[in-house]
Length: 160
Image 1 (cartoon, rainbow, N blue to C red):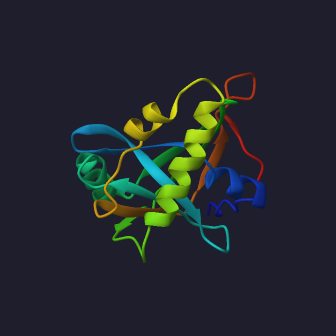
Image 2: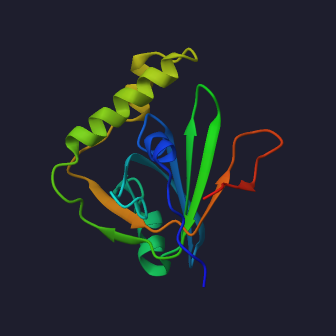
């Protein structure tokens, strides 16, 4: 039996920071991909929840709901540090509580990181525009994790 990936504290901080979050799954129509805004790692560091716009990611939400299979890549644009988590028990549910503050913090942190590489606030605000009433929570247990930072270690499993 494959054991759950325990997310170390420094990795949890990275996942919850101002990173690009790209989610993918595969359904009857083939692979689907979308952008998430914000991440929360559970207190026991065994589950990850990302937030998806329902209207912008309808096919992705449907694929995850049907299969439970998900791959999520977290990338810090200014450094290209990238981590991929994969799971097979993903669930879609309404967000618990008010996710507005979390989404705002995520967008602001992402804006600051993009600013380091020359993108202005106007670009980030358009890229990351959202309606707080149009979100679902995608929660999963990471079963495996990979370093996806460009370079010699890309694709290597992360130590857990």
